[in-house]
Amino acid sequence: MLRLLSPSSTSASAIFPLLRLLSASASPIFPSPSSFAVEEYLVDTCGLTRPQALKASTKLFHLKSPANPDAVLAFLAGLGLSGANVSAVVAKDPQLLCAKVDKTLAPVVDGLTGLGLSRSDIARLVSLAHAYFRCRSIVSRLHYYLLLLGSFHNFLRLLKHSPRLLSWDLDKVVKPNVVFLRECGLGDSHITKLCIPVPRMLTTNPERVRAMVACAERLGVPRGTGMFRQALRAVAFLNEEKIAAKVNYLKSTFRWSDAEVSIAMRKYPILLEKSKESLKRRSEFLFYKVGVEPVYIAHRPEILSYSMEGRLIPRYYVIKFLKKNGLLDRDLSLYSAVKMTDKVFVEKLICPHKEAAPHLAEDYAAACKGEVPTNFRFT
Image (tube, rainbow, N blue to C red):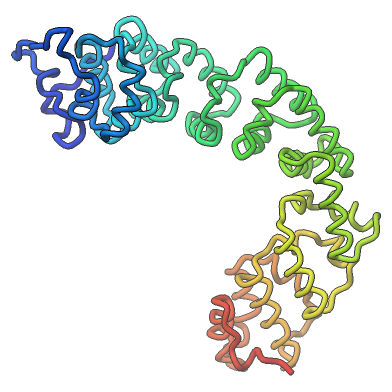
């Protein structure tokens, strides 16, 4: 059983007027059942706004006394929740005030502690799990997710993306999806990386997940390859019609043949997530400014993932400047240049020319901010 904090161990600003709850010497004085005003209690003791309290009170009409809500608030204070957090939790799940501390909340906390969670971990979980925290099944569910995801931190990241995560049926939905993804060649670490940004890979109907896998394979990305996880992410929110439309747009925008668009999709399936405006800007820059051929882009589709202002344009300027002034002793492609980290790019292409081009570092920095320095204005 978790021991409640004493008033001296809780910040005065951290929790509401709970001194009467936590003081052993104070005699509890409760109003008569007929005089208990739930809405006022929510505002004065729980810190809700008047509109929040009005909405929450409709779910607490059966409360006749503050005895149980007082016990719940004291319990939350003992977990270390701040006043703002308690307000948010009660506003989201008013019925938490009706939960029995001894029969529900304390056993849940004991179970979570047994899984290795600290008091601060449990406090964060209360803030995110809402109504699911008062379900004793949360312990067994969390145990499964901890084993799958590898850490409580990863579980919280997944829960933030999928607030209803704890409501999904483990045996009929989540576990079958995990088993199938493993059969597709994904290890648990890859499943974690896939499902945190795309929770529906765990929580959607297993037949739908199988359809997503089939769709990824039709893009030319086979199971077990390094790009397979990226392909699943790319098709997760698209139906067949939208995928076909996007592929056609890629073909027309980058002048690709069927074979070339297939090459690009296999190498970088995340292209399906890129906006039409983003793709169009990059195609115009690469075709009309840089002068590359469609096949060049098809074999290097990741070049379309880089920022125009932060990387493509500034590095294009630098390479062109160096070539024009005879300072580049090798045929360096734009793709090779944009792949470099900023540190490596500066070390290899800026620093060696401090004497011949003392302004180059300054001009490159200005170009990264969207400016076009005089030295980069080529005719």
